[in-house]
Image 1: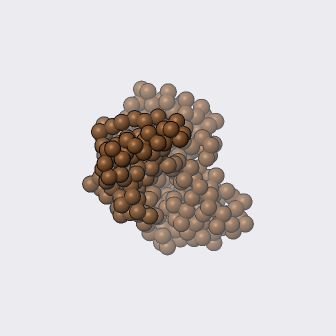
Image 2: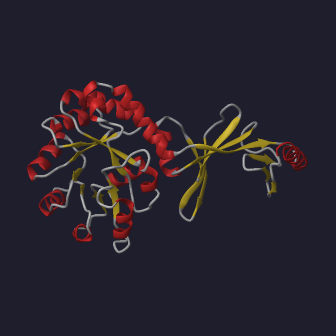
Image 3: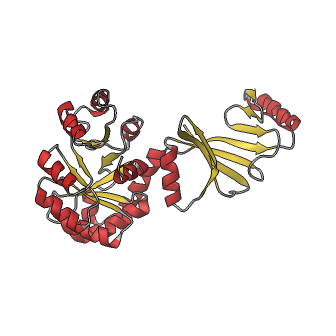
Length: 319
């Protein structure tokens, strides 16, 4: 896939933005950046779109700003001149797609039928928009089209929200979802950018789905680990499962047979999408010990943060 599509996949969610007034562009961009989604598809549904893209691209150069609802070649030119890094169209317009390809502008046309996907494949596209997602058959339709077009990936938009986001992203042919539930029009109009920032962070947290998987406790010996496991079993009926380097007490405690990572032990945090979690947590300023990465079948399954937190090492694990 292209650089833009790769960034979409890291982000997981692409905010779809409608701006009636360009004065809202910068505070909105700031809210999205601080909320954890440094990206915006600014739709050409209003006269403010071009200027909004220009302002965002100039003031937030690290932000992935693109143009949506692009219907004409003139809009492609205007968006590109304003600094848009990608073009999204609601349907498959061969003239728009070919024009973007000719100018080497990443383009993601809307495709909701096999015939449209076939046209995209013929032009070498790897990712297309699926719009309007829910109204056009949702995940079931995407899976049906992905079956014959095995190398095509999709960016569903339309009807996506916090409740159905995970069901879409769980399908490996979906690179990201477009959505506007964190950038509601009435909130933009009211200037509630703090609320937009909070909704954006909630969207990221909902997607990643962090939860404590278990706590690892460092013990001096296998005998101490075994004794503690028996005690926890007597107290709480936690089943004891003996492994090579540790003993699990239920699912919540891993009792190390000898001191491992962390002064006191370690904490395992499970996430829905570990690669996306790494990206977003690094954006928040946290560092990972890349040498600790556990890879199975070509995908990351676990990785430790650098350092300790309250005497504990912390690692992510894929759900």
